[in-house]
Image (cartoon, rainbow, N blue to C red; front, side, top):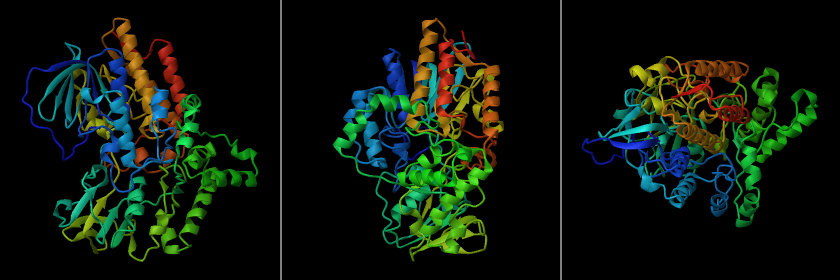
Length: 549
């Protein structure tokens, strides 16, 4: 992951650039696997990571309650059956500390850390057209060159930090969830404000609620939520999952969102209301994302179906809020349909609002104007005095981690400037004009948002590695997506997205959470299985659309 943080390496003196066959930026799920694959090919490769350890998302996001919402049995690496079976998850949805330990376990098993330079932020990467290499510089002035540059920077790794005027004036403690400190943060008995009620904010709120003295939750956009069912896993449980390794490995590559479940309930309009209700109830009780990603795909394109599914979820939420009209009006979405935003899993999140020491602040009625020394001032002139402010403001998703590095391609073109006008990629794997730069988790691929991340990131790493191997085998030094291919992909991406209700909803999926960000669905919504088939077809035909020389 490549984001600014408080950790920094000792200043290095500029010297003759080190030369590599390939450089990998980031040591998260994708970066670790990419380093492993390139080393297998015998390439001289180095990984660079801003943090002091591996983990990517699971290194940085150590805020209270952080955990993933893909089941442990499919949030996995699939290149080694032995590696899969030898790790023992403690529960269905493990928390951040366990996931960070797992990624360290993988890195140690593969002896990857010796080829990763930690505490090092990549500041710039400029393509040298004459030498046909990337010239890379760290924030400390260290210089490197590489024929191939693979950016595994993460899709949610550029946290929004400076959102409100006056943040530096606050007299208390202020924390950003995506840059949470390693040291324990004591919130016991304190007056705490949480700004943001997306997936991250929800996890924080439900986790700290028992300990704080009081909590003010600043709510702007209500969220549909699903209660998480998170049973403990025994060794026998894991042995059963291990026996299905090959089945699961094949399955996740073919489903809509890279999970082991898919839209298998049958067409909405061919079922009776009772049959539909049975499907929704069963998947709701599963306590996973299956209600969203394995019930009825028509909810993404048909407004009537969307409304019926939304009514089902609203009723569940209303019951938990004890029909408190003030809370129902504030916390239950009415303006958009279920599934057109990211759907969080939670654990007694809604019940927090029923606590006497918790206040929900309506930021639709009175938006936050600024942070003042005493706390947060809203547009109605009220100052909410608190001891601690927690900002769960989300990320500049998909593109932010890449635009925070000064990438310069052919003719000096700037990726930040280009994406400031229009975000474009060739399948999220390359950008025309940037030879030998490959990307994972980048815009216009499922991995940018709509996928079980281990599924999509591994698929992209494998495709990139095979493409590089193909080029080397055929005596080619440069791989670059053509303008025609990129144009075709952007057109296909937009046509696919335009058929859905997702593009009609303001969310971080559309870049709506970042001022001035060009509006485009950041993630390909044509399905993981479909995307993978298209990638496989390109590889089988010798990578048409990716010019090699």
